[in-house]
Image (cartoon, rainbow, N blue to C red; front, side, top):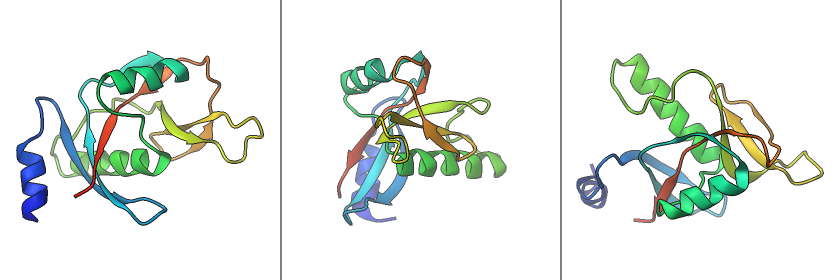
Length: 132
């Protein structure tokens, strides 16, 4: 493991989970840290505020997909990564491209995207990005 990644992992706060790295569309590699305590039922505007108060943000669709893939792989191997429970929708920071109203996008644990209605109450998780 890269020494910078080892340092990041060793400095995680209680309850944080290192979720690996993902390259953004603009070519920047970010390491994702999943912050503790996902929110079980929250609307989009409050989810954005909640994530910021935790010192993070809502993940993008790609980041959520990556996190869910890591969780599924760990579960298959008998390891605990993070328990997202049964299949639920989660808020992402992306806007749903197909939706003319620019609604916030949601991601189902199955990998299906759909527009969300800002007043809808669904789950949210918060991340912080670290560029190494």
